[in-house]
Amino acid sequence: MAASFPETAISTERLLLRPLAENDAPGLAAMMADDLVLTWTDLPHPFTEAYAAELARTLAPAHRASGRGIVFAVTEHLTERLVGLVELRNTDWRLRSTEIAYVTAPWARGEGYAPEAVLGTAQWLFEDRGFLRLEMRTAAGNTAAQQVAQKVGGISEGVLRSAWIVRGDHGESGGSTAGAPLGRRGEAESRSDLILWSLLPEDMENPAEPESAWHGDHRYVLRD
Image (cartoon, rainbow, N blue to C red; front, side, top):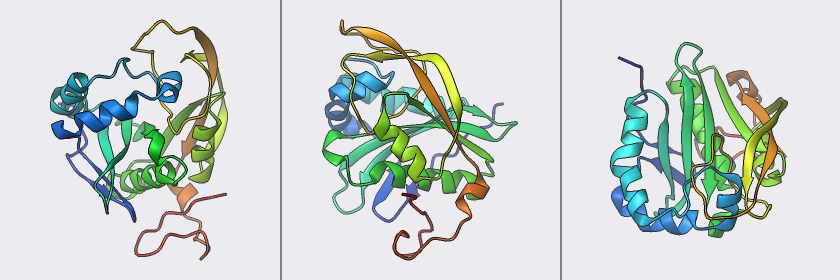
């Protein structure tokens, strides 16, 4: 039987990363309707409430149980509002390595939620699950996703040439994901390079400066 992640939740200073629930479907569908999410990700389009409910009820649990990864809904502690989605995928249990993809809702961008969620996930992976490598892949034109990778201390390892398909108009978004595009709505498509980033446990060992550290017991550090 394949190794798999436990059904769990991750708490950061402002966010709770938890399993998807069926009542997340309206918020998920609204979040994924954004044109920039369509451009940079491989998520189906249209991303309907029915598909979102199926994702929560069947697809995400099967993804976790198979050992391929895990899907988290990202919510605010104070409001419980859904502000994003984080997925671990392409997990290699022998290498203790996995890839992270993330999407931030249009109304939640610019708040630092994506790096906070990525860092919280990385700390959980390294300290609680014994992982040794976390990968991120960002399209060459997706500068917002590249900034997230840089802020969490990711190291650029090179370029995967012509490894991605961009859909629709190009622009910046808080999303990063890799894989074959699943949705279509007739937009023009073009091939893109992917930038490969990695984060290792030792990349998170530098102590935080007071002005850059988050308060409380959380030890995550954002790098300018």
